[in-house]
Length: 329
Image (tube, rainbow, N blue to C red; front, side, top):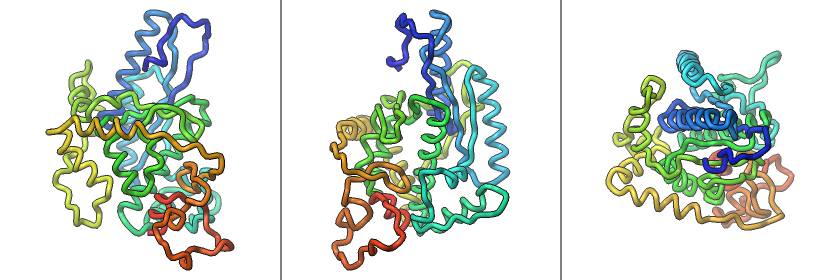
């Protein structure tokens, strides 16, 4: 967070930064650290270089689970009252202007006099052919909502609480899904194609280190954090197991015995640079830039039979290779 130090600048305006809160140990620890960081700036200079806008996106589809999440969110507000807070459901993604569901061949049920809700989201996700596709679409929609909320609230950047372990998981997961071109923005600090910065302040810490930290803070964060169970019992043959689950299981074991390997994956991925190209279009789902002629499975050579390529007059939205695989199976 060196960028957000107060260095005697005459400017009185502070930058607004969005912090996604998932209730996990990483995002909770990041909020705790930044809350203290802001407090020390006020104690020294009577002002802070930035302010936090804490946002929770509810991924749960059960109303009982959502009520519990809402109650937990209130606890965070009480513990860290200095900051602004906002909560949204994942179904809000169905209303984003940047996603044309009809053009993508996905029908979103429209019910008169009310916006799409949990039921409509369940139908969209249920139309995907596999658990990995459903997980990938949900993750993509999560990012799109965070970017939309950040822009609507004039945030300069999004501060993700991802650890080195989580970034390593993402590097291999996105590559396996066919979205390796996005690693420049998925694991690196800096500007993103969405027009808002992506930053990962905890990128040098392992997941196990953050979990320990969350239990020794003063006061402890254990009453606020939801700790995930070990993924070591997952079965690779189960239909409900996703690529994300398998990568999490793999790096959980690697982190325990060979932490340097985890760091090397992130360090190597961070060296990637996007190829400058003025002829790009945005993917209709994830919104990332696609070089002309490389959209979908066919543009990437995943299917060399040109006869199977959809005709130009069909109603197909422009998709990157990864999103095309998730939607089309």
